[in-house]
Structures are given as structure tokens and as C-alpha cells.
Image 1 (cartoon, rainbow over the protein chains, first blue to last red):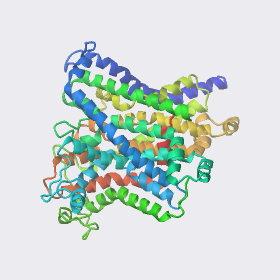
Image 2: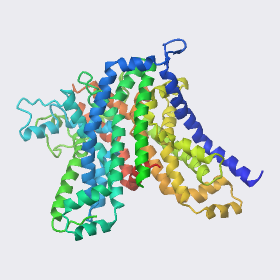
Image 3: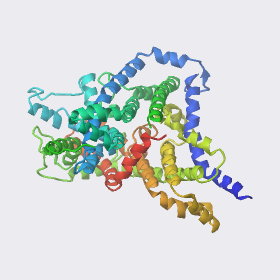
Image 4: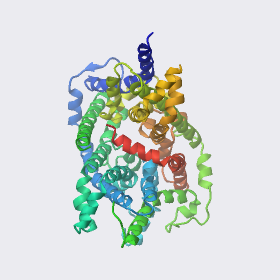
Length: 292
Length: 285
């Protein structure tokens, strides 16, 4: 066997475990998710071709529209919260000052915790009777005398409560992306701005932020894509309640597939989520290509 | 970069405020886990525990399984096995694949690389239903292997990407010299190339650990027996069982700390690789 032949063979052997994993746990489910969404899946017997029935069923289901709406409201509210904290901490960590590495590692710390664990920790912070947040609010004169500040009472307050947790837990990721962008900005820009007598805020607004646009776009897209996949924080903290007002798209999909055993409609929901995320990722990659 | 000259004290004031806000929930979970119940369940919380005790840890550690949930010892072991398995399997598979695609003249390597980075476009969460069906058909429900293989597939894109970058930065002459000496390809990979790719490998392993230890949804959907329950799901069941009894919050905080400690230890020692992985996964192209 020639050297090239041998090398080709060894290469194929080495890449084959990865290809097998990819074929079994990614490509097959990918193809199957379309197949499943066009079939009816009875508990017993063979699947039956039903065309677009699953999609029609899903679109006629009020719960789908409610979960879609909630997922969008959640995404639109949590994204600005995450961004404001991320850009603030990123600017703080990018200063020429002593201790920035330490600050950065503290601001990133909550990212390391799992969403599930963060949810348990915040459930205790929010505890209606003995939670420290309720205590602090009362200490500063909010919440009334009868010790009853239940953040889980309405859908809106539940969402803001989860948003606060997610902002705490996740802004570190975007901070890192923004810091990487900030570090790529050359010092001359700041010096020129200084020579022209700009104040610090003017410099941030007119020099830093415009030059940071590609990183900002990337951070925003990541936040939007991540929020559309929201699942465990709501499963654990609100359980979709009160009265299903905080059900996300993924929760609705899981309900359909695992609680009601409606595999066809659940698969079609998966396809819808796939399309939304696909579009977002294509935009993300486009932005990235164009700007770097 | 900007300098803070005249108002440096303001800069540090803002940072200190932020540090307190960011670390407070973690601090609070920790002090709550070492408070005795009567100090925990009170209308005037104490910032520092007056009578610190490991009661809650003892209690959660010795909690007996019920018909609806397991216990923390087996849940911790299960999560640890899946995490270690994922780290090993994804490190081996991604390294082999990246080596074949960057160093060797593997046929169709450009096409294969495109296939491997394809999951960027289609996040795994949209494949839950067909994945569930597949796992059931393969008999991989309630198995370590099922979770390890799915996590490793999820790590493949970032893993191959990181290892590819690492291998590409090594001069090819190193391998050629070793080839002339008559070493086998695997031997060259392990003894010559891999030692130079350690930072990439560590980033990959840190992220495999992070993804599998912190996972909730796969552990929740693909495990339904009590003896295979994973740590995060065990804690959820504990939460849902309710707060009727006054030891509950102590237990939950102790549980949260137990699930956080392993990952924070890695964060303290391998912090730069966490950061590298974040920028790497956002900038996969």
C-alpha cells in the first residue's frame, strides 16, 4: 500500500466514530423530524401519512399561540436586560485599571452554574415567606404589612422574576463576547477622541459603541436564539403557571410529546422551532462574515 | 481602553456594588445551607450564620429514596458518571476527527467538516421528539451510554472546531520528522501532536463537563427510573415535593451547593478555558 493510500485509510478510520455519532444522533433525527411531522402516530400499529394535518392541528391549538406569544414577550424583555448588564460590565472590565481580571471572573461566575441550580437558588431568594428579596423590599417600604409578596401570583410578575434570574445567570456570556470586541478597538480612536476634547460618555456613545456594532449584533442574536430555547428556568420556577401563562414553546412541545403522546404535532412544533432558530443563526453568521 | 484618573474611587465603587450583587445569590445559597432550620425560617434573616451547622448536608446526604424520587448519593454518582463519560468520549472522538480532517489527507475532508459543523444551524433542542423516539428504539432510555453519546454528539461541533484550530497551529514539519523515523500515525498523534494541542483539548474537556454536568432537559426526558435519576432532576423533584416541612429550604440550598461545587472547582483552576470556549462557541465560523 502506498503512503498516501495508507494515510487516507487511517484518516477515514479516525473520523468514522464522529461520523457515526453524527449520523445516528443528528442526521437521522433531523430527517425523521420531518417524516414524523407528516405522519400520524397511533399508540399501536403503523404510522399513517396525514400530510399537513399535524401542522394544521398545531396551528389551530390556542396553546401554541399562547406559548409562541409568551416566548416572544420573554425574548423581547430579557434581551435588553441582558444587554444592558453585559455592556456595563464589559466596559468596566475593559478599563485600564487594577483588578479588571478579577472583576471579569466574578461577573462570569454565575454562567458556570447550571440553569437548574440557579433556578433553585433564586426560588429561595424569592420565597414568599422567608425570602431575602421579599425581606429587602419590605425593609425599604414595599410590599405591605401582611408579609405577602408572591412574585408567582401573576404571569407578568413571574416572567420579570425569571428575567431577573436569567440576567444574573447569563449576562456573563455576552460580557465576554463584548470584551473581545472592545479589545479589538485600537487605542488611536480613543486618543483622537480625547484630543478633540470628548467627555467619557461622548467617547462611549460616539466611538466605542459604533465600532462595537458587530459584537453587539452577535451578542443580541445569541441572546434571542437562547431565549427562544428557554425551558428549564420556567419548568422549575413557574412550572408554566399561573394557569399556563408562562409556557414557552419548548415546554409546549415537551407537553405535546411526553404528556399527551401526540408525537406528530410535537414533531411539527420541533420543525417550527428549528426554522425560527435556523433563520436566526443564518443572520448571525452573515453578520459575522460581513464584519470580521 | 479608557483610564479612570480623577474619579477612580467611583470606578471601584461601581465595581464593588456589582460584585456584591453578582455574588450575593451564591453567598446566600451557601450561608442558607449551613444555617439551622430556626435561623433559616425566620422573618429577620441573618447575614452571617450565628450557629453554622452541616445539618442540612447530613440530612440531604442521608435522605432515603421514595417512590417518586431517588436519593442524592445515587443522583450525584449518576451525574458524575455521565459527565466523566462525556468528557472522555467527546475528547477522544473530536480529537481523532479533527486530526484526520486537518493533518491527514483524508478523502472528502472538506465535505466531512461541513457535515460536522452543520449542527450550528440546527440546535439540538428542535430535535427532542425524534431523538426521544430514537433513544427508545435503541433501548438507550435510562442508560449512561445514551446520555453520554447524545452529549458527545452535541459537543462534536465545538470539539472538532477547537481541536482543528489547535492542530493547525502546529508546524507540519514536526510530524514529517516523526514519520521519517517510522512512527505510526496514532503514536505521532499522541506523543508529538497532542501535547502541543493541550490548551484546545482542555477547553474542549471543560465544555464537555460543563454541558453534561449542568444538563437538565436530557436527564429529565431520557431518564424515568429512580435509580438512574440525575442530580438536577433529583433537586427538581425535591423542590416540587413542596415546602411544607421546615427543613426543605435548608435541604434545597445544600443540594444546590452540592451541584455547584464540582463545576466551581474546575472554574477556579481552568478559568481561562471557560472564557476561551465561550468566545470559541460564539465565533465558530
